[in-house]
Image (cartoon, rainbow, N blue to C red; front, side, top):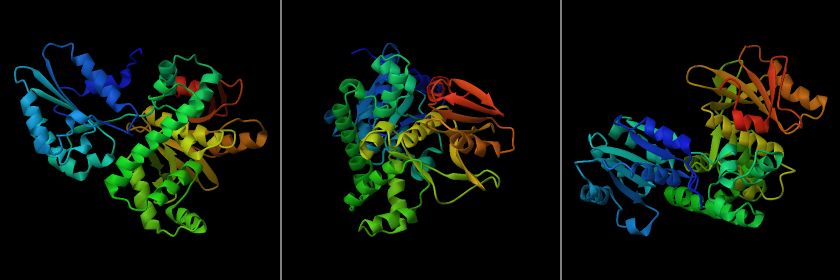
Length: 404
């Protein structure tokens, strides 16, 4: 099988080498972190001055590395002080008190540390305190549309986009092929692994049936504004009594595992964040589709919104949901330098009422930041109307926004 390099992530790793910084590849399990780490390992193995210390905690040969003391002993035995030592650890959160080892080695002049993790708790206050914030998190996402085409050797076409919408971007689908039954079985295997290892076991959750129902509820309601109270009321109607506090804790555990992402609402006129009633999106739209079941005809709007959200994050934006007095903007997107764009995601702008809903809310925003509608409307590549740019979903996924 041809080796496919996710070069953008390799470039990000290399950008932070030599800066006394621990590099952490963070993201959902089976999203490609291990693959990227191995790609980096293979690249530096060509350098005769590099000594590679590689640990994969998902392989049985490393089962004896359980605590930070075990990790220290392993590193010390493999270290070569006459070379630059690259400590590469896959799924480091499975090593108890790993942060103590990281603190011991990361400032050594002959050591670079690059690790992966599938739970954001690994970036807890304990780690920050021990190493003084000297780490760089590189968030690894599911395959982009362009990566999906590259992995599966598909042309840029409406049919390929339909497959991306349906199957999503788990890299492991390359081995399965884009077969409906095989891909769904694989996606559900990934889901159960994430749920068991990074949610249930890590958080010692006992009410397993509830959290499984919760994930399916979030899959059915991706992109909708919901609150812990509304979920509790729905669950009560289904015969499940649970508190809002428990729901908040469960959704946080799911977010910590990168399975879902919580997106806050932002008051555009008042310029403040609301503290409740958020939206939730899935890291991988294919996995979300497997959980929701059925075909995409009935929920295509949700899937498109999920895909647009993830790609906006991939473009480097911090994304919130825009709240107006008389409506909603799907996404308010900002970058650290203060740049902002507004984005509406839609399926097809087929009539005047749909156009008014998608374009009208954007027209009520009186500032001069760029405004976009992204849809699958046939024959639309790019159109500008009253200061609003209408982009096709395919073009957006290939080229981003014109301001990027």
